[in-house]
Image (tube, rainbow, N blue to C red):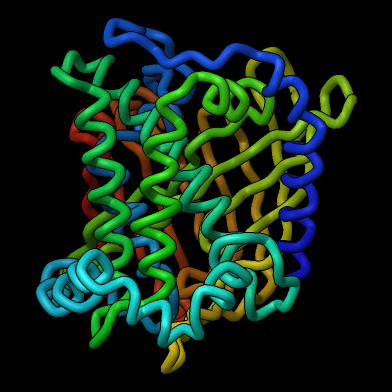
Length: 368
């Protein structure tokens, strides 16, 4: 958990230093005709070209499928059971879930506020980074995507799309659930909802986009055959935090784990970033509904153009030990619209696939 502590400290210091600036600015909410693009730029290259409502559902909704014990069975997953006990009961009976967890005192300490430094009680860290900050970024990026594609009521669709992915995320995490969990209450009723509401406003959104240079650098999710699995998925976010140096920033990558490192500006458009830290290896839920994760070392190398990721190479303790992603706009000639990836699993198997940016990022691949 050392990486998570460093990331938490870095984020806390950055937010604290920026608090006076945020307080001094006038808060504003964009009008229905607003055309500002902060997260989705409409590039024909990189992770920006890959991003779509479908990729959000696959990467955010099935984020947990990266772990070793996950079967990746997207087509025959027991959705009904998880919906009944893991989702419906969160809304209908949140109180009993909190009581099983140990009451509101423990709920505040573990899930809601950064009051615990116990390595097994850092659930609040993921809630603030992945659910709150990541959820807000996702909602605004989707709003800009829908606007760019002339979809009516883009903000409404962005909200629905983001929250649907959050619900799917909770479902995919608990196929055998028999009762609602306190983590589900914190995620769905508090942090996921708060992200959608707060990031209506321009001030926190511009802070993420301009000061922290936040971006969605998710993997290129693909259905592989003949095993009919969801492969190479996972929602990841990057931050480049200014530290007073001209061409160098602190690099953070969050998602199923945390990496911290350095991002170096190579020219007016390109950055090379390297991160090391801890990635999620296993996830467990005890009888009280307390979720804990086990971390192991991981890292990666990332090359982007205008904050749109062009390629990445990562090593991880998850099922895909080695992953290489090349995003649309990098391959030459007629393959320019395609993204490609290849992974080596913990079972010493190679899997690969391609995605097409004009097909909402939908991809097909091979996996035994």
